[in-house]
Image (cartoon, rainbow, N blue to C red; front, side, top):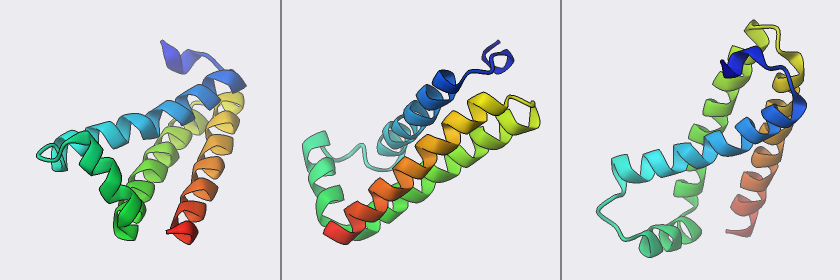
Length: 98
């Protein structure tokens, strides 16, 4: 149903939400033994964790981008691509500041 729409705003929304979902999913799969506050603190202190989450978030968006490109939904793909670039730049800045 959602694959039938071709909309830049939808792509931006999906590209923004999927990495957040990936972070929450990874938290529950690998880090749920830590309280959320300690988890966030550890991400801020450990450069390797930033890389770990950045890789998974960007890979998830690349998969979503590929799905929409293969279904000829170019406007949605464009929105996903834009947000993926924004996430990439943000992760690079976090790595530089850390």
